[in-house]
Length: 139
Image 1 (tube, one colour):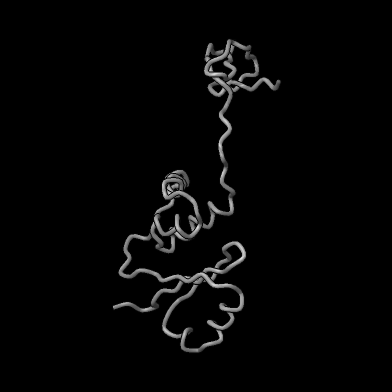
Image 2 (image 1 turned 135 degrees about the horizontal axis):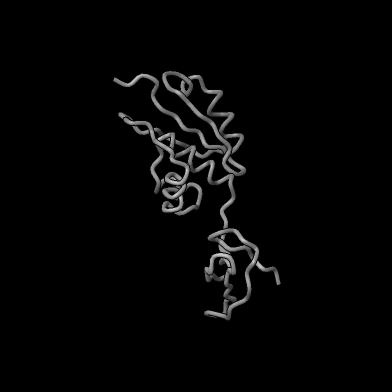
């Protein structure tokens, strides 16, 4: 069994110190801290973290990000806090977004009426594309 290092001081001088709730407990000989092994949790891929933060910066709400990416809005909120992301101060509008496959994206872009009077961001979202569109000049 791999003996972990102390989470408090980082020392490798730890000994086994019993079992609590079927989890091995350890005692650090350097700082006298008792701890159990780290719990094994589900780690979300960094790709989804980056996409969630991009969407947040574009003004998409936390619940909408949850629906789009399948990641909890609480996780997104925690990432925003962890990385100290600040959303732009003021939104006078809400960006609109569409999820399109490759052919639908080509058809959308080939239509000149869709391209005028707005800013647009296209980002990959798994095997599809997300098109975020906002008005360029808003009174």
